[in-house]
Length: 266
Image (tube, rainbow, N blue to C red; front, side, top):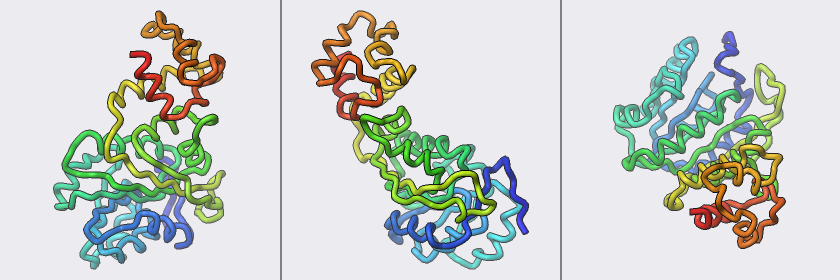
């Protein structure tokens, strides 16, 4: 029996019920390369392999490798990589395994590092032109999935930043009893599709959002005025021009309003 390691945030799925749904959300083609993050005991891996796409399973826990090798080594499209996903050079492993240009990601992510993993993939997609990340489907902590998918007037900094780079949706809720060991919270399936073309000045818009959310309970106008960058601007007049109340908080702005706000503050 596997000895679960707390430092890796290991909670393995008990059945195919939700992994099967996750695979369907990815719409995998045979020409795709799918990077699976944390195969664990191989529940999701076993469902990915029949798609006949190239599967690169990245597993940090060395003690899980013998079982995965024994179970899947005869599958010609199975490739096992013993590395920490947050440290792995994605371009190098894709080149090493002669992957196609269309990349998808799948996995039941450790709850404690799921945000770092998703951010790494989104930044990777922007950092090079050879490979294109088309879709991701992950099992994450349910409240995190809800946070990612939230929109105005209850948007968060996380949801705004992610919507700047991708379209996303929370698709499923997963009872915590579907995992072992049983975690304290439920899970959820989050599906993310990076945008094919980026909004101009997206990095500056990201910076603006971070300032707008620096004190989420304060009004957006106060947060912007407290930044020396826009201290000379008539913030209330600019917000009014966007149809935003001067007492509005950052959470009340849509992505489109953030983009327009950036244009007016330049």
